[in-house]
Length: 162
Image 1 (tube, rainbow, N blue to C red):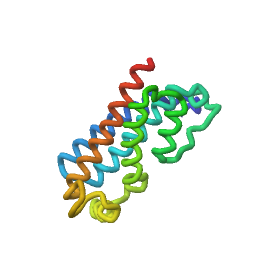
Image 2 (cartoon, one colour):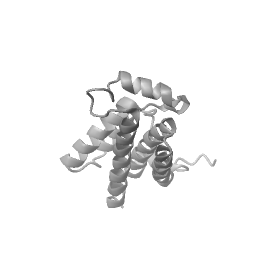
Image 3 (cartoon, rainbow, N blue to C red):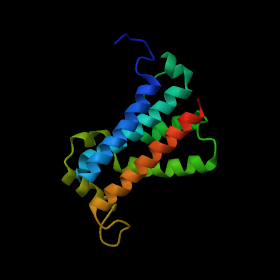
Image 4 (cartoon, rainbow, N blue to C red):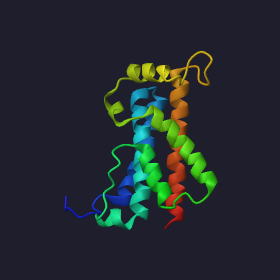
């Protein structure tokens, strides 16, 4: 690695986000829920990072750090503060989805088996009797749909800002 501030940057975060959501789709279809859930969340993190890298000159130059950890809400706040969510509709819809994904995802899920995530989500009321989603499979599919929608919308916003 050269040490250059932009050695990773926008394009790698963008492509990585797109690949992770694709990987998550394959795992979801195979009912490998833990991997699908983790990678879909990672795709969201990556595309939000891409947006920040593209819009923030100081981050690109290395004079400002992109230290948000894996906090999707903090990344969304950066994206919003950079003025990338022009319309209230973009901001509100993206924020609602990121808030839901953030409630269910965190970086250490990369170590978790599906049963752990299923139990955690059941405890959070994400699915079950009398809930919007009856099963873990339905909840995982809806979560993936939210992650996919976030990635697609951010990709469109990235394209618009070229």
